Image: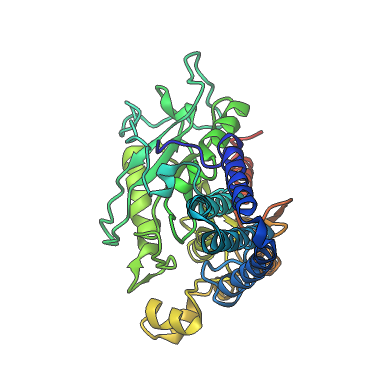
Length: 427
């Protein structure tokens, strides 16, 4: 039951049909009160529109504005609830029973419609915070031995696997003492054979918010299928992709700095690379490492790409913010920087770019959805600042994309290909 696909039309369309049929049944059972039904529909739709505006735009609960799908479905759900109220108050006993049934059907239909628009929870297990990602089975020759072949000159063997391998791992915060949840790792086919080549690494971060976890990248972003497709086009070659937890918990936001909310920066720049080098045939130089992410993870990519070019010579920022932030500047300084305004200013990546310029060996891939009204306008500001600092920048706007996992999946995968050209894995 927990594997039920919540984004599938085969699941959603029958649910919508049942909800509509239930609503029609309630209306038919209260046909003598049709004026009340009409009023309830109009008032419910208006209240839903106001609710969407107030919660999404005024309170900014999710830190992103509602899409038109969110606004329409909020109005539809409230209109259906209005019909249910009329049916319960004005109808007889059978109509009341159907009206009661309409309430959960309306709420579930609306919730799943919004979920499909965002692409966040593909299954019930994902919505419950469960992950079915198995522990990673490391390649048998992953531990130190003779120096591996350079990836550029490597030739695939006949027994090259058709797909990469992914799984969960524990990356301890030995230096940072950061309490991270399990990370995910994807290994390309080239990493799974004897005498595997030394491969570049992409550290890929999810966003922050309800349900946020490294598994979002592979489940909502469909990254495993995308990475396998990339590897097939390049003789089994692709970077090793490590998806660590930079949050500690879904609603926590350490902002990829070291501070009272957790030493996230040290975890990503020291603990994660140390684990990778100890367990995998990975390149060691900063030019062969990229930091990437979506939303809050994109902000982290911007911060660490600007602040640690020695560790991450490339960065992929998809729909990130202009810099680390919580609800507002006051809360950010107070909770994230112990009230130290100077420390907050010093952590702003555009300022870091200007102060550390010129960046002679850094490159950036900066992207957002064409319909992302909140974070889309950040892209040209980041691009301009990075180019002014000497960073080689590629800008990408994802057509028909908002602040969602459709945009994230497309842009993060394109960023991996861009990085492969930079590291000569792709020809």
